[in-house]
Image 1 (cartoon, one colour):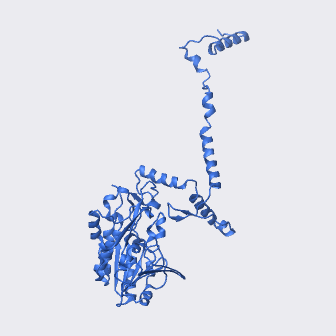
Image 2 (tube, rainbow, N blue to C red; image 1 turned 180 degrees about the horizontal axis):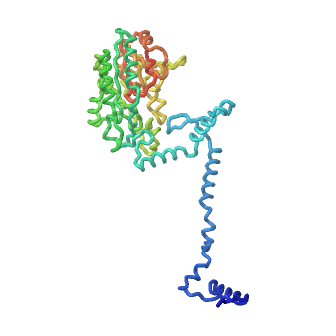
Image 3 (cartoon, rainbow, N blue to C red; image 1 turned 90 degrees about the vertical axis):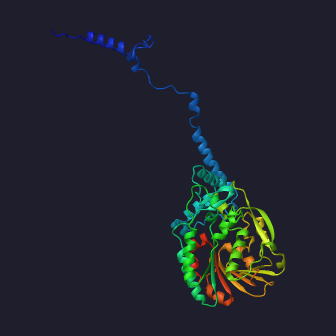
Amino acid sequence: MTMKHTPESINHKTQNEKTKVFPKKNEQKNPMDLSAKIYTDSTPAVNEASGKWRFLPAICFLVFIFGLSIWFCVAPKSGYSSSEKRYLQEFPAATYKSLSSGKFGKDFESYLADHFPVRNFWVGFNSYYNLGLGNNGANGVYNGADGYLINKPVSVANNVEKNLSAVVDFQKNLGDGIPVAVMFAPSTGYVTTDKLPWIHDSYRDDRYFNTAKRVLSENGITFVDLRESFLKAHADGEQLYYRTDHHWSTAGAYIGYTKLCESLGKKPLDKSVFHVEDYPNFYGTTYSTSGFWLTGPDSVQVWSNPANKGNIHVRITDGVDTKSNDSFYFYSHLDEDDKYPVFLDGNHAVTEITNSNVKEGTILLVKDSFSHCLAPFLAENYHKVVLVDMRYYKLSVSDFAQKEQADQVVVLYGIDNFATDTDLVWVG
């Protein structure tokens, strides 16, 4: 039997279904009636308090960015960073050539980086952040024990053999009339292994020194090996290197002087003759590149022989520019953070020292900056000490040595500098 639904019956059924599925607004619901919960409004209520503050992080970020921008624009710009020991990027000139080549953009990026507000803070923060993550040496400098900041080893791909070949060629150009000796200062990390962090790269001084000894001896060139003397002196407690700088200390230079004199047949002046002056608050090159601004300062020692007073003359030449001084020491540099240029006024093309107390002998040093605090010692044994820096002197050194009538030539470098030097190829 077929049931027929009249419109009234359909409407009645529909109304009943609606009533069952959608309870009336004021109708009390059964807590166990899940069907009623299915159709309830699932949109969470908005917390008015949290809504008011939900844009706070974005507002703080914008205030920070715009604040730094305004600070950058109005803050005075320094041309030199005493912490990093370098001149900062100047605002680049906007020319058609610089704009079209992209040079302006690169220089402007450097300008922004160099003059960013509180730059020293961010550099230091980055260094100590890396240190906290266990990445000691992130900026090429290890934060060692007892306040030592030590340069990481140079790359295995270096110029040691190439520069040794250049020295051999230089000796051949000089001829047999002028003997040549070579002396390297060992790297700080090689000697002060007890100051290094537990995890560090290997220092290859033994490999480089052994190669130098073999190559040079085969060509009749004297090699002065400082490894044993330095390792012993460090074990005895002598500070042979600065804690905040890559150079050897005056005490280290004195050991180099005594060993060099032994090789050259000269008698070194006894240590007791010298008057030692100690100058504190020295922040050197490793400090400036490391970003470890919380490291304490070091001291610079000046060793002077009272008998030399009034007998020393220093003449410095850079191209056509010259200047003179009546002392090995340029004391005005002691007012600076980096006090190492107190020795012979730092890097120059040619530096000539004469000591009227010594009547004869001329020695020529082909050198880096390690020679600056050693040369005054050599002036105790030679009337004239001439220093030539290949970074700035681009003429023939063999011709210059002949002109100066040098009795001895010494190639004197820190081993790391010798390994990375690209100017010794012009030494001939």
